[in-house]
Length: 117
Image (tube, rainbow, N blue to C red; front, side):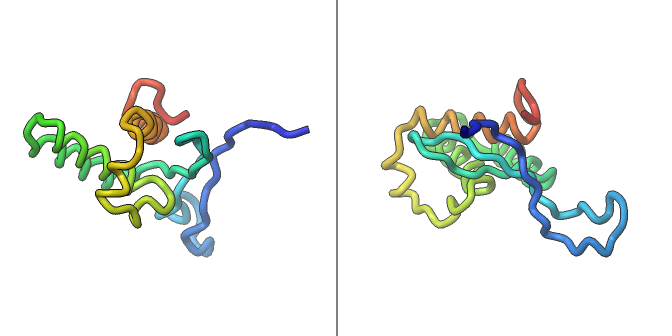
């Protein structure tokens, strides 16, 4: 019997010689989500990444192109292997799938309504 539970995982980026909360610095929590019918692994965004995204959003005009660039930035920061995608690669995906993936990343990172799930 197989289970479809998505249990977040924590990568072990830091040396565990540090005790307490200090030993958790730099760790990434991940989970699998569906994108175009396949599982992809997303990571929670760090505070620094969230602040960078918010700053980019503040400093851009409200246009579809800048919104698309912001969407790509969120995905590249969080999805395993996405930083290797070109702009042309992104243009080949369905827009609704990219939007859903970005929304899932934001929720998982605690930025949207159903935070951290």
